[in-house]
Length: 190
Image (tube, rainbow, N blue to C red; front, side, top):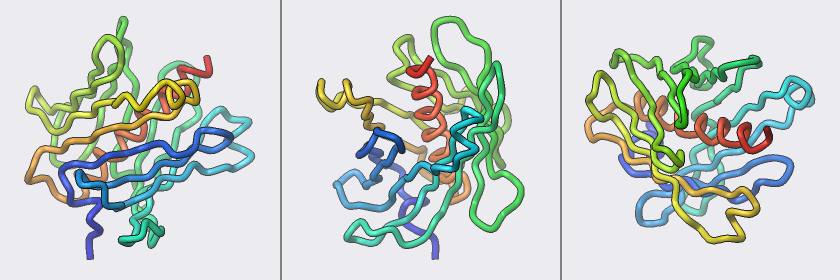
């Protein structure tokens, strides 16, 4: 059975913890919990400057039931690269690679079913369009959740996915969204 997390076209991803390890809750547009995201805390990640995230589906009470995605930040020196995996699969479901850009964020996304997928941020990197050959696939909007959350580095993202995409494509787009947060966190640390 496919979890709701990978079938809903609108997800609200709210950072609940930003000290030492990041955690997020994922809900549908009505506020019902559908998933959670937890940062891995491997010691090697600390020394390599990379990190990983595990996305899990939740029950109606918000309790994690099973991992559905793993996002890895690969060690690199210039342009960041992220890989998205489904549990029990050795090949990445999606690869997100940072591209050179002046004044705004640009990444490429390699995923099944769509060629030449680009992720482009606006000037402030608060809104991102994800498109394949100019055709919109998804939009990621960063919401304002107050000054205290801003100062603590906590973010809320609204992920809106084009209707009609399958669960693997939803997973790739959710992984890309979490990669944007990983990239944002790295930029803030620099």
